[in-house]
Length: 303
Image (tube, rainbow, N blue to C red; front, side, top):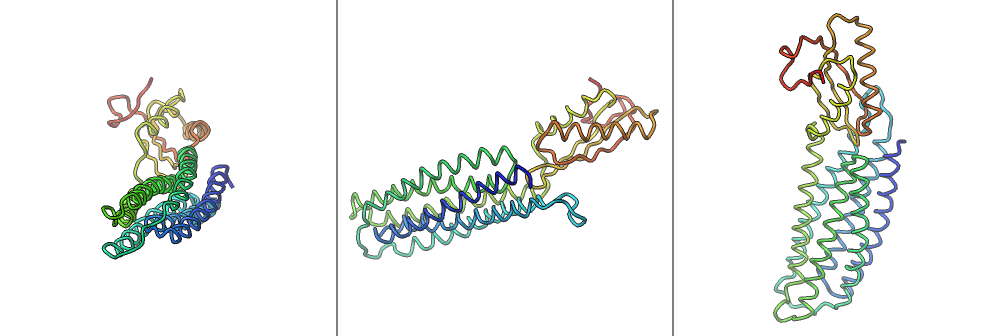
């Protein structure tokens, strides 16, 4: 098990425990206080437990070593969990919005103001969780952890929305009788929009979308630092979980032996893996150098 996977699993376990506690408290207090928006926020937190559970499963599966059927490892399962989290958010948001609109126009008691306290606690805890997940998600390159961080960010916004709706309803029940219900609907919309964004980001990784050009330039820089390489012809990278697998085409002196060119390719491979932590492995293709004029467009020539 890698350090990246260990970090991800620990954060996911903490998130499950926190979200489960918040969900129970908000649903119970929301029902006692008669607040639709607080209950809606509690249901959303229950969805967070499911989402973090998927993230945990993704890390466990992704930690399995490469085998005959999965030569690139099992990292893609971690990315798939990010997609699942996005879909969970979309369906949960739709359900929350529909449920919140059911009570509009029907007479009901004014909710109690004490329903605001679990929302305040939720905001504080979710700020801590979201910050932690964004920080470590970017550090270890985890799509699932970043998806869960966006999920927590939604919780902060949804708690704020619920607080505003509840406060308006309590402040002036005559004018803002439906505010509590509309607050729950707004929470659902926020959840749906965020779920679509999370699903798109994860789908991009599964579709082998190239990383930012700055990351590719970092690979090229390490490769061309080898004095025996004349140019870097092509550089492709695809994400497989929390790291990237790279396809690199280098150009060398066409007069050198196969053995020597193989040694250069091996040196480049290990140099990139050592210097760039987000690279899992590199497949190096050796091409004959035909001079700057003969190099393909986009090649990096001699320094």
